[in-house]
Length: 67
Image 1 (tube, rainbow, N blue to C red):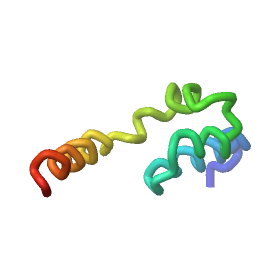
Image 2: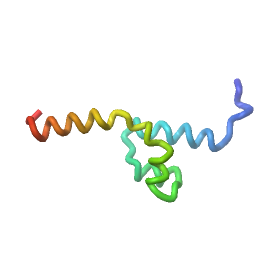
Image 3: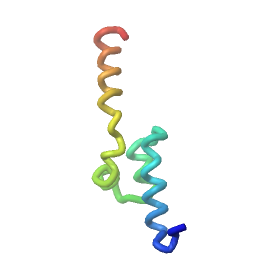
Image 4: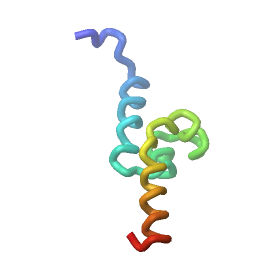
């Protein structure tokens, strides 16, 4: 199965990589995975929030155009 190279860190990274898709905030994620600050979490996992620009566009349209 290829589990010989599986390490605890790998499981932690796998778990953390799935949290943003579930709507977990950076702050909460940093606490759960025990980073010293959310900035560290963002340095490592920023690429996992690619849909944020779409959310910003939708929110802006709601604010300025009423939907």
